[in-house]
Image (cartoon, rainbow, N blue to C red; front, side, top):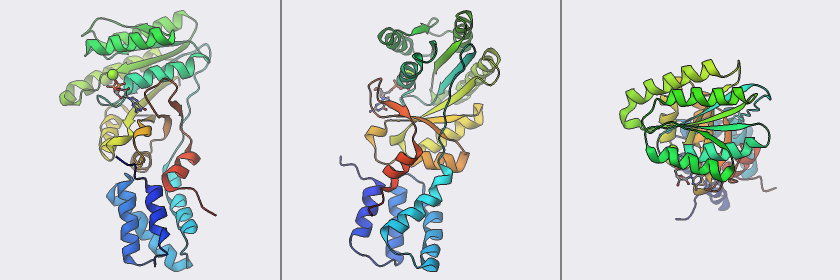
Length: 292
Ligand SMILES: Nc1nc2c(ncn2[C@@H]2O[C@H](COP(=O)(O)OP(=O)(O)O)[C@@H](O)[C@H]2O)c(=O)[nH]1
Ligand SMILES: [Mg+2]
């Protein structure tokens, strides 16, 4: 399937020297919705853009894209996490099944392990395969993995991983978790227990909760973010599968609706397909670069 990005849509929209009439703004609104901005946000944006264009006599593509960028920009945040040497830090990876939590935990381990000792915690004890998956990543990356038996209490895995890091003089625990939402109440209770343990075992100010969101799931991601944010409080998002979609407006929606910034972006299945979120680059790709 061909990628249809908002940037391309905007380019097409301005390609035919169109008048800035109602049709134009309707098409612009459709483009923003297709880019995963959500219908309400898209309509609000287009509404204020329409007024500004009329008021300021703006009609060229670059100026309109610049106004859009100006409007969206405050909602998009970068987030960086630099664990301190000699301290016990914990990064908890949260999210529903299949979004890429385990893969992201491994990618993060590779990202951080040259900076600080890393221990992976196999706290998705719900599926035996998840423990094995993390162990395999650990072997390939030469990263230590703390795991318990299938079905064990995930918070005790996090506890033990934190103790292992402390015994080694500090470092970062990256904890994978289970994401089965079909048993939502149990999952949330379980996550809240992991959260309590992690908060008590990490050094002061050294605990972060990352929500992993699949960029291809669109506005569904916003509902996931709401659920996890309400249950345990999220610090930042990791946007995965960004290679498989040209949309990615979820980074804007989650920022606008929940104030959540983005820490990293996953762009493939390889360990190296991972980078800190770059807001300027993201906005360039999302809206298209100025052409003048
Ligand atoms: N294309 C692509 N695939 C990814 C990315 N991140 C994860 N995946 C794939 O998504 C699938 C589910 O990942 P997994 O880590 O097992 O998800 P989990 O259930 O949340 O732990 C796997 O096939 C991964 O290889 C990414 O950034 N891009
Ligand atoms: Mg997993």
